Amino acid sequence: MSSDRPLIIDPTKLGDIEQVLPTPTLISSPEKDRGILLMQYDRIPAHEVPEYHPLHHVVAVWGMRSKAKLETKFDDCYRWRGMFGRGAAGVIPAGMKHWAVWDRPITLTVIFLHPIFVQQIASDLAIGDRIELIPKHDTNDPSLTQLSLLLKADLEEGHLSGSLYRESLATAFAARLLNHHAVCQIKPPSTSGLSSQRLQILLDYIHESLTEEIRLADLAKLVHLSKYHLCHTFKHQMGMSLHQYVIQQRVERAKQLLKHRGMTIADIAQASGFSSNSHLTHHFKRLVGVTPQVARSQDRAN
Image 1: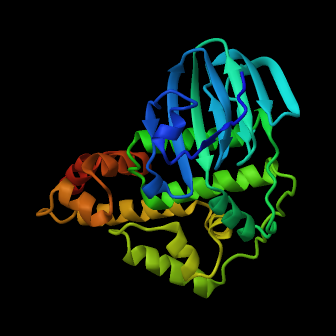
Image 2: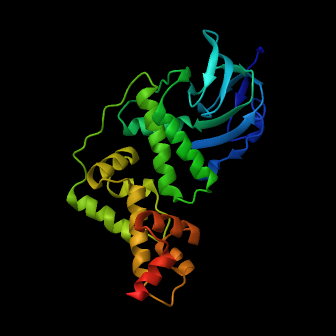
Image 3: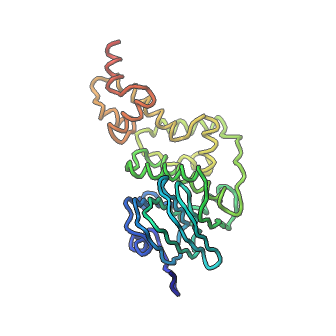
């Protein structure tokens, strides 16, 4: 079950991961996602994870249909065995020795968070310099599970929704972890919001950058807020998330461009900031109720 020298696991190195888990079904790019890395495992057979020390914080979320008899150990002081699964999550702090074994096939989403990334979010939240996550074998946190599902869906779709959406999810995931699974809990951010001048600067920047990759870090820097507080205050003031606002504005631009008969739907998608025809069509139909092709035909009929 254990060895004298537990493995040191760096999740950015696939060779390290394959020492403790099988090859993942799907894996995100460390270069693209930076502080957060996701690995999806479909139907891992009964398995024993050897003792290891993760260099990143780890959150393992079991599939909603997965259930198995689990035995797990943190360091040499805490051990647990019992039935586990169906959306429950385990939290393994970076550097903590961990071992586990389960008795039947499971589906698993494993999210690794770089300690520096988590520390940055903690600084945004004024938690302090020392981060102490609480090791948990079985936590029922629907919000954490839902965020993991959204991160997984974004990865499966090839990150079609862009950097802003991905960064916002990663920030929300880290903040949730700190708020509910750490020794020090964050204080709710102030809802005093952006001044009208700063909000207008932000909206103008978004409108001028619709055809470009809009990053959360750039928006936060523009209005002198942390990424977390910008996400929170923007939604509080505008009634929608930053990502939802950007998509809305891109659809509005597409609606105007549909009046130009010389532009194809592919031209309009590119000129509106969408990654493809299908990406435009998906969001256009969701917000307008019809596809761009139908909207153009209706406009011509009128």
